Structures are given as structure tokens and as C-alpha cells.
Image (cartoon, rainbow, N blue to C red):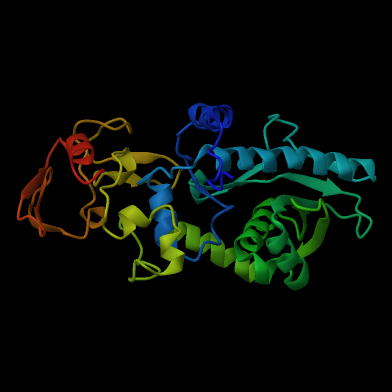
Length: 314
């Protein structure tokens, strides 16, 4: 009897690879309202500054697609029971979207609904899919306690949309059961979240780490662990450059007068470099580091891409 586990068939591997190949590795241009409830402001800063591209495998990317497809089904369910749903902005034809911080912070709603059995007032809409364990926890404890990131997303959506209620709907991926919860606007919480976004957007330096211990479970499962805890050099982008500043009107400015595209004058923000890189000299257009592990001197001046590709990227 063959007790060895079956290998993943080549056809299945090809399907997963297809999802990886078609995925756009473009970073989101703004800080997303769907993530502002993350307790780690530093991770959000790395995300906003395009410091690292999370690497998702094909299976997980397919799972993301499953969640997207479920949204269409839930909208059809709502309309079938008499709820009027707006998925798109009637003027632009695009997803309903709201902004703050001049556009540096933004949130797209899953929709706006009106005519629920519980209330005729308009509600923002948020749809999620969950595995059985998370679904049962949410059903027993409610969104605020079980999924604080989702709850924060709902608060931001209501606040920016000028509404006082959100209808949150979650689908159990194991049983197809639907959980629904009408969430009230907490104005104080929403304003605090907007302030949190402002602090992250306009901070020239990364906020404090959530935990100094890299083995903490909240850090170990973070997609920015590698750059946060000093193992990897951040990606080269305008937003990881010392010369670039986010402006109040939603644009970015460059102290070198360059268009905001990655150029040969990119200069890493020293505070995001690996923890073993100690600054030993600096000027307006260069920073010199000493690698505390090897004693090597690394001079960052017009060679950020070489540093990124040639050091610590294995």
C-alpha cells in the first residue's frame, strides 16, 4: 500500500500558477480603509510606502477571487428580497468610493442598500466570506469583538459616506449560512481612525513596532515581517525615498524636483534599512552604512536598485 501523500497534480499546479501570472503586482496608491483597523501602524506605513510586495500563492489568490464572486451573489440575494442596492456610483460608473487625507486614504464600499426588513434607511454594505470557525465566532460574539478590522472598516465607511448604519453580511464558506449584523456608527471611533490614517500618511518615518520580539505571533504572520524586523532591504520605490513627501492635496512632491517616478537619485529612508546597517556618514544625496555583521561599508548614492538586488534578497 502506498502511504505517501499524493503530489499536487501538474494540472492543479498550472491553475495555481495561472493565478500568480495574471496577478498585477501594482501597489495600492492609497492607504486602504479596509485595513485601518490593523493594530500595527508600522505595517500600514510599510504598505502605504510600498516597502514590500506580499507574496501570495496561487491557491490563496484563487480564494480571494471566490470572495469577490460571492459579493455578486449576495447582492442578487438582497435584491431578490426587495432591497435596493447601488454597487456603483451613478455618475462615474465605478465602485462607490470615499476619500480623506486629500485622497491618500480611501475606502471603496461593497455598495449602499436601502429598504431592509429592519429599516428603510440607507446603509453602507460590507460583505465577507469566512471559514466555519471564524463564522461561528462572529455569530456568537459580533463583528466588533470577533473581527475588529472589519468593524473598523465599517466605521470608516459610514463616517466617510455620511451614514449612520452599516449592514454587514458574512457567508460561511463551509455551510453557506449567512450572518447579518446592523452596525451603528461610532463617531468618536471613526474620527480616531481617520486621525490614525493621517498620522500614518504624513509620517516621514515608520511608526513604532507593535512588538520588538520578531517571534511574536502577530509579527510572524505579518507580510511585512521581513523588512520590519531587519531581514530584508525594502523595495525601491519613490515612497521609500528620503526625497519624497506626501502632500495635503493627495499628491507627492520630490525635494529633487523630479517627477514622482523611481529615478537614479533614489535614497533609502535610513530608518527602514536592516537593523544591522548602522549609519556612519550622510549628506544631502547619500547615506553610508556599516554592516555590523560583516564590517562592510555600504554607500547609498544612486545605487538603490543594486543594493536591493545584490544584498540580503535570498
